[in-house]
Length: 576
Ligand code: 6R9
Image (tube, rainbow, N blue to C red; front, side):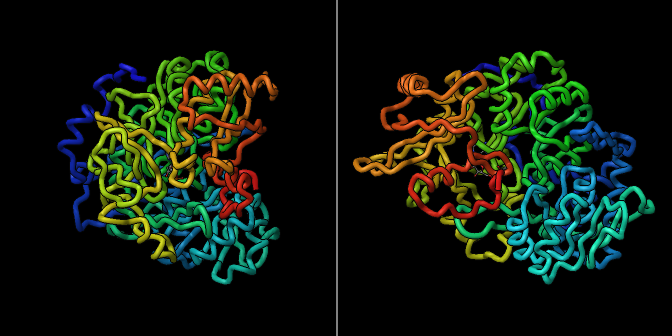
């Protein structure tokens, strides 16, 4: 399917082909006023630098929660507030490179303390507030976390595991109304009550100094802590500018939680390094609430995920059309394959397609993507970011594949500014990601004759039926085209003849009930769209699908159930 849509040439990137041909990272470095050997500190790049550009009075943060409570911060207020955190943490004994975790809801303190930690030279460890004690303890033990920042609502989960964390010196509660409520080793800090800190000299990190530690769930075993560095901002800055197309007048909304890499690389760093006003909503998913926020704040750029887009689709176009969404000018998606159906739906609903962007916690920034100004091929991830050499390589030999359409592993030529510099405490795991001069993503794709990448599936999600490999994405995309289907997950289930066959788990849109007739109808519907091998042999209706906290369908959980195998690490599972 090919759409002829092009976005006006006013986009920041201009012509993708020209940029890609002439780019080197010094272009981005020069824009940031940085050159090799200079110190670089993400906290200062996102606040002090913006104020020095004369943008101190510009709004940095428009914040709202699900009760309608609002806060606004200008860049100058953000600068002073991040200084307050940096100074306070220094006063309580945090030294550069100490790990400080941020464990709270999406309140302003999350975003501000994150940058404050970086200003001080500490390593920020952002965590989902929904984590339970088990998920927390493995991450805090592994990182040897010294200080945890949290709120009254979440402190009890830390208290439960405190005895297992001998190196956790201090828990800072940032909304404590009454210190008598605190236990030993806990202190209260209030951003509003703290004395303004006009000057704080940011730690003179160099580009390789560790900055952020993001845990990503492994397939088996423990979650892995991907360690990033201050120099990552060079890439986060330029990719936010060119892919998200952020500009001076934009109101940008990244719907990702900062416990997920999208919520920090682009929900904090990329946006504020560009001096852009962000809207942040501390509340769960609701189509209606989301549309109201877009209308109220005049959101122009919206960075979201397929899981949310599918829920918007479930609730129908009419709901969207009840709201004034005319401010939206560019929509981007990340986290999972973006089904062609979702791209088409968004064009019909918002008058604009969602542009896909592909990357990983480990890559730190967007790697393969669709750009404003480029023809979008619905269902394709687009092309590598300028400065990134990406290929698909043979599944076994890891040799690059030049043949258009042949499936292999997505591989990226190291090193780019924002690539992780290690897994915390896990050097063998880190080295296992590299082979023959490539970083191996663990995802499968093909590349067409024009250089567009077409995602197939994660390596461990691919179904081997009778020796033929089938990616879940094509099956799920076909299912999603059926009117009754809200979401689906295709996995392999044991089969005597073919080793495994395709089984599809399906959730239904409102107004549809599971039945044998509907199952038959869906089967017939996809039969026309899929090869016989990719055809689901079994359909199971479900009320929900297992997902990570960042909204990714965890097919391996369903697969393990089918095979009666251990489920592996499920610490990021949404409903634990
Ligand atoms: C940013 C982020 C990484 C994994 C990645 C892949 C999947 C992300 C995707 C996509 C298809 C896209 N993924 N974006 N798959 N199309 N546009 O998601 O990081 O949480 O580490 O997940 O997510 O499987 O390897 P992370």
